[in-house]
Length: 264
Image (cartoon, rainbow, N blue to C red; front, side, top):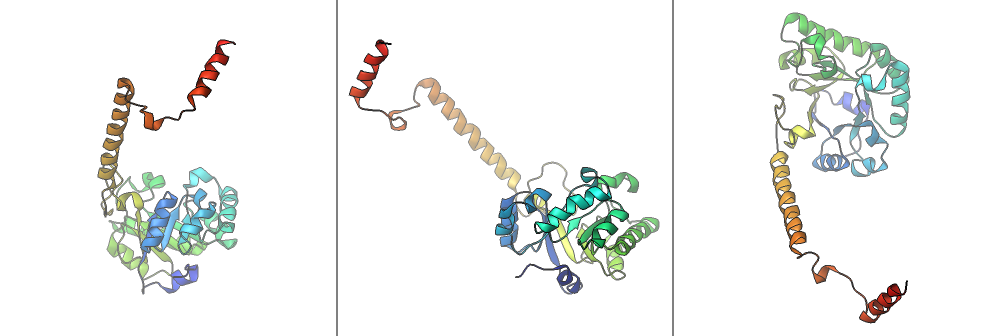
């Protein structure tokens, strides 16, 4: 499948549900691409690594970073331009509406963020669903419309009641990316850490585990400790290095070398 364009995503609204993952490594990006994941959220540095497009040539890639890591509007432009030049298909922007407008005015496809925004959760009551009351649902809608008017083509809608997401989807032309916000959106988004079961501790309600890498990591760590312990034991007991792990030279060379050392 050819790499989708912004127009492709918008044209597919209501006809196709896209899959999306946040990946942190090239190995994860390659696995996602081979599995058929269409949209990838990636660390900005990854788009500058030529190997990314070698392993995920057909993925629509959104580099993303928190606004406080980047700065203001001019900083965002300086951040986004090289990413777009290097092959990013769009960029995440959790900054101001002015920043979204400036990016979109320069032709850079922008994805905004509404609902539960972790870096701004204090404004909506902390790490919990947003939009369960009328006033909060209205807030989410106003955020979506403001981003749309500022020129964003897409928005991540996070931990919003699925019925609210569905209602919003019917009233906007934006490409909606759901993280725990229901099938009314156009794409379903999870973190690879959650999909693979790499996280420990509390897991978000919307995060479904499809593997248990944490248990596998525990198993591998036990193997590491056991192997290293055997190495320590053999060193202490004089069993390592055994002859098969050594190199040697002709005895005459050793004898000549010793004679030479004695004369030093």
